[in-house]
Length: 310
Image (cartoon, rainbow, N blue to C red; front, side, top):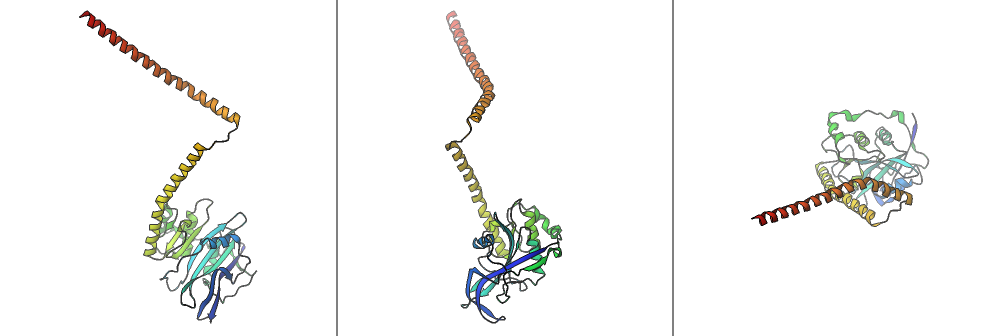
């Protein structure tokens, strides 16, 4: 058992009207509000800046009970590592245009996504709320002994998904999944030393190739994602071949710095290994040539003799 500090921060906005009915008057994704830590960790800010925790547009037909999209991702650099869930909601600005509003929950270290989701589910699934004021240095404290570790993937409908070989799994939209199940699928499918990344209930996503698991909202989103991945397959193969060709060219056109004693040893051993077979081949070729010439001479003399006798 241990206590985990869960920090949070949200998209920086200025709002008008009341808590019941409000709209965004000023909006920027680069500034944050309702933060419990300052500054935002560099590796987390970089992931946001590189659109690893963003969507291009908000889904149009989300279920009424869940008016948000979730992205889960682990990030790290040489100095630190964090687990993140981004809860994405839709807002309206003063010109009645749609804006995307993000509320980020982060815990230091890798392997904390399950704890973040457990805390999220037991705290009424908090989404963006500009009136939910937070203070620096006052994170949420969560006892991770409350996290359940039930294996939801034992169900028959998940067995085929676990065997899927594609690097990014697009789950059939009509397969009922919870965000906990999506996270477990990503944990199982991630390769060694790779970071977990998944998304839940999306129609479109930036950089889909960086995710292990994507759960599309509907059939159109599923078809679009599958088509996108199939189009990426041939360029990936071409890039691998191009990379091999480039490396081979570099090898052939650039001198390799090898110690002199090693170079001499390579030539000595290699020469010893190939000299005997080479001699046999040359001798065999020479012998067959001699026999061929002798055969020609015998036939010529035989013909000359027979011709003279007649």
